[in-house]
Image (cartoon, rainbow, N blue to C red; front, top):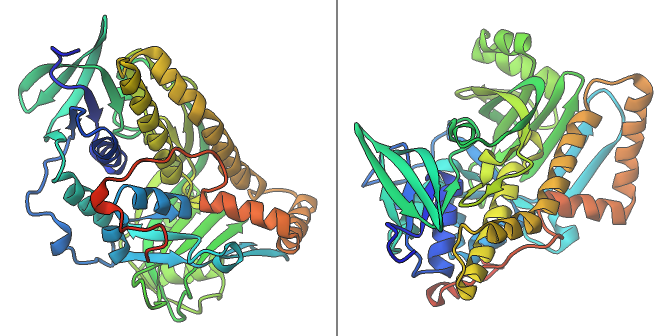
Amino acid sequence: MSQSDTDLIIAGGGLAGATLALALARVLPALRVTVVEAFPLAADALPESYQPSYDARSTALAWGSRQIFGELGLWQWLSEHVTPIEHIHVSDRGHFGATRLHASDHNQAALGYVADNRWMGLCLMRALQDTNVQWLAPAEVQGMTPLTRGVRVAVKAGDRMRQLTAQCLVVADGGRSGLRERLGFHARTHDYGQNALIANVSTAEAHRFTAFERFTDSGPMALLPHGERSRAGNQSALVWTLSDDTLDDVLSLSDADRCRRLQDRFDWRLGRFTRIGQCHHYPLKLTTVDEPVRSGVVLVGNAAHALHPVAGQGFNLALRGLMTLVEQFRLATERGQSLGELPVLRAYQAHHQQDWQQTVRFSDSLIRLFGISPVPLALARGAGLVGLDLLPAAKRWFGRKAMGVGGRRAVVSRPAQTQGDSANHE
């Protein structure tokens, strides 16, 4: 492939695509990587100019994801604006029983963290400035043609079409871009018949760095600690599951009435809800692709699997998959193989498959188990939460699943200049 335009094309420069580009730059710095991103890059959008916004969208990072970002040398910047999750409280509305997880039980500083998406993006762009990764933005991948050894990728930038050759195309532009379908991949979708309403909220009492998972008869909800890192504030990130009719009703309410409706569903564990910010919403679906690899192309992130957000596993699963892919690309390079060879991509799929199957089952089973159900099963769930809280081994397993650790994970090599970013740096 010495005559190719680039070695690897990443379609999508969001969190997944940018993280993959950075990991490749760290592990395989000689690799020619081109990122194709639909949105223009802001030249002055650097972490130094970042000001936290009350309405910022955020992502829950498991402890395992924090370790990965540490290995990439990114945590030293990310940690400036993250909120630790030191405790997790799981409950079932209207029924007895609850499970409580504590970071101290796992000898860790936190079970995970909450980070603003924009802050994560700025830190990634700052780190990528010192690499050889090339960007085409604004531009979009329109299609792909297999070659004998590699692929020809059609890229549209404005009114201009370009044909770029590469060893492999990585689709990392999410599940709703349409590229996955244009390339002929079949996605299986289970519609939960619900919507996620996302907003930041304030409460009368401080969150005490606690994440709440609350299952109700109308769907699950989550509150994640948000805001300052060193002080337990009163702001939390809300994920509220609503039916179509209920969503329309809630959106039509005033902020004060919306807080009262939320109060009724969540209860008073954090006192009175005093403010709710800008609301975003989207339909909830479980989407999986059984065969996310073909010769010359691989799907990652939401393009390969999209999970229910309440369990907070989606991005963390994607991140582990990205590191597994980087590991297989490294091995392929050492063996003199093309990155897009089917055995290389199938090796990635084989190593990542168990993780994504277990995570999908874990996330989906929580939603189904705690959905609308008969009273006997609801009572059994309550007893199960009590039992989980009392059985150390079961509780530790549940905690490690929430932390995103315990299974096989690829480890990336850090460059020499980031060796000071230890796994325990806070």
